[in-house]
Image (cartoon, rainbow, N blue to C red; front, side):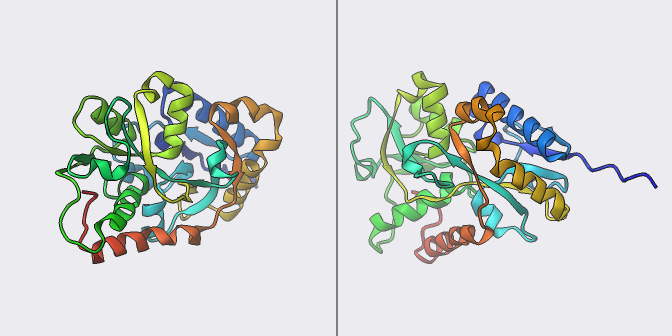
Length: 276
């Protein structure tokens, strides 16, 4: 009897494909993982403005980045394959990230509270770094009071790139930026990054994981996971990981993301529906 052909699965890194060169590095890394794991993967761009929810709802995902907030809410929950470990020192060799509150470098703002009464932007309501984390962080500044902190809350801007554009064209005065996106920007687009300045950051939370669709065979997921966990030890991946500012990958745990919906509930209970 002939062995059944293994299904080709989707790889995608749109969340962290900050530039074409970075996208190509992700594609190369997924090609390497596919060969080493013996799991057919094909890279699909699914570029903005295509909704990420459409991508995440597919039944053939094999190694696709998914924001931790919708990951924690999804039923059935996708399968966590691995989580990236950003290389910059602030992550302390852990699969973590945060939100940087950024302003234009030439603005007069020094602290986050200096921006109160100005205009804040946000990406989409299902985003941890672009919505849920900054909203939860801002709760501490409200001190239980009602009413907005900002004169205007502008969104959905959808992507980190659009947040950057809105800052630079003067549409908003402060905006949330995924810290790993920000670090990639500093490495690969330093001229743009030099026009931005971080005035505060949220607490670290688990970074968006690479996931597979819920029905993906367990042995397929384990082969991909084992391959990614070993990536840092393979000389072939060194230039890819360097390009991507990665120290490697961690196993991750689905339960680690459960704190994200709890942050949303806390904001809702405080009558704080959007960052603003």
